[in-house]
Image (tube, rainbow, N blue to C red; front, top):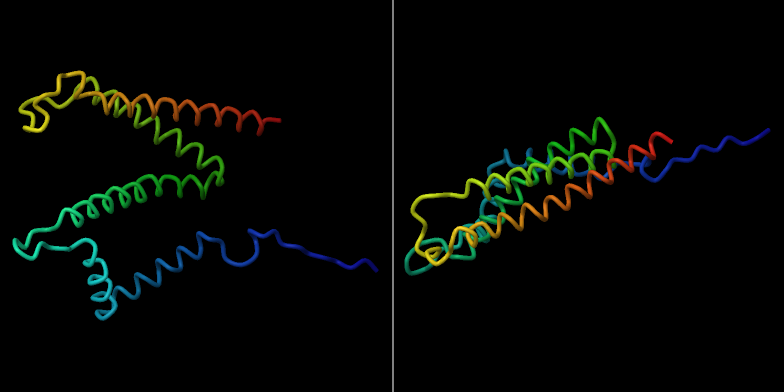
Length: 167
């Protein structure tokens, strides 16, 4: 009598990384409802994001920079990550990554082009006085060109993925 052997692939055994991350977020949300843990978290975050100058009481440059990095990383994680997650649940990991990358860099091409064409006008800050109209647009031009290259790479990868799926 042949023995029936069932094997699970590695990604089918136990919890996936995304499920573990979801459980950790759920536990963190529950702990945030308890005042002791909430105050502990606020104080721990304040060590980096709420450092103040002893003489003036103003936020230090480090604290302001860390707040900026935190806002940028958080917004990218929320806006790009949400789109990727929705695509991932419906289309699979690889196709979701390719579509999210193409959409992100396509949007950056459009955004960079609009900034190059309609750069901010009006009174410029004192530290930009020496820049002419072209020099003022150089960062936006660089962003647009880099995003265009990455968009083309994702578009080519999508066409190859589609060709492989058809075979």
